Image (spheres, rainbow, N blue to C red):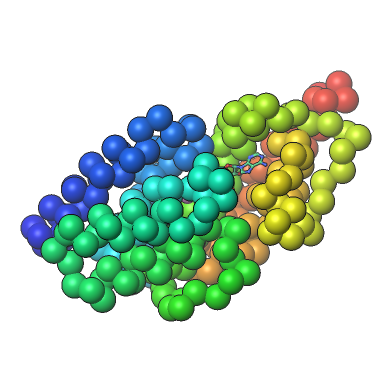
Length: 219
Ligand code: ADP
Ligand code: NI
């Protein structure tokens, strides 16, 4: 990486850390750290623009709509203001902003202006961090934060929710696996992402099997 790019990357890291201070543990700096590492790894294998991927990963969650009364424009606005303070070509800024606008699961029924490989990579990396051991930990952490029941056999999962229903759903954390996490494997874009998602998916299935066995006292 060029010196100039390295410096912008470091400044972006500081900006994001500052913005995310005090964030809930599923959306904190360490989520960004993991998504960035995953995204850079995928970018190498898929021969994408690593600099755009790194900045996109760092900025992809700076203002989650969930914590801004559903306002999905707060994040892109903050990112735009920040990126304009950096010495970057307009074209690079546009690529990064396109990523930030469309990376979220809830936006996936809308079509991005530019469905770039870099956007697909960040989406894959963000989804991978919702899968596997980390995904399980994040789900229960989020459920606890929201004071949700871990599991309730009387509340069946609803895998076919609309965007509006999904946003206001008060379902159990185990249901979240059936409403989102187990669906993500089929939504991966890159071959590298698909391979990694398959492994993490298998791990979650094993976890659920054990969970239900223990729930009934069978294990
Ligand atoms: P993203 O912003 O990455 O599209 P979310 O903000 O919806 O996704 O989710 C972030 C993390 O919180 C994920 O690991 C996800 O599984 C978890 N999470 C989101 N909603 C729920 C829920 N209703 N129950 C449990 N975990 C959840
Ligand atoms: Ni994210």
